[in-house]
Image (tube, rainbow, N blue to C red):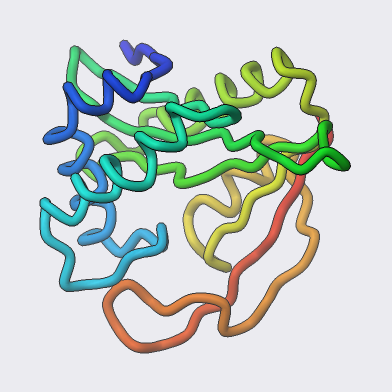
Length: 174
């Protein structure tokens, strides 16, 4: 695997807005439960990065990690540690995504390992995340030591149909 994990700034996002939008678009079209439903245009993906991620990166407490394979954006994950004063030990994994063309190569695992390294660097000892129950990411997280905190039925709408899916909440002590 020749994947490089890079920390992106807001300026990096702006420079790579097209490929990042394409990543998001491809993942949503493939059925990834990352907060969006069909129809979903490539421009919608760009809007996500421009209006949701870039402002957070300009503030405090958000890290965007991008996986590059031979210079192409293959995946991304965000680490959100902008927490209230009573939670200085905690952070959240957000929007782990790997482009369908790059899956089954260890990219998600590499992104998560780097996210955990970033978390330790800012002295976070508890990571939380949620994933649609039964998705391919759930066993990945479990294999990396994440524990199930609970399952909420009807948490999110399916990407393609109007069915409501359960979400599994997970955590890991670092």
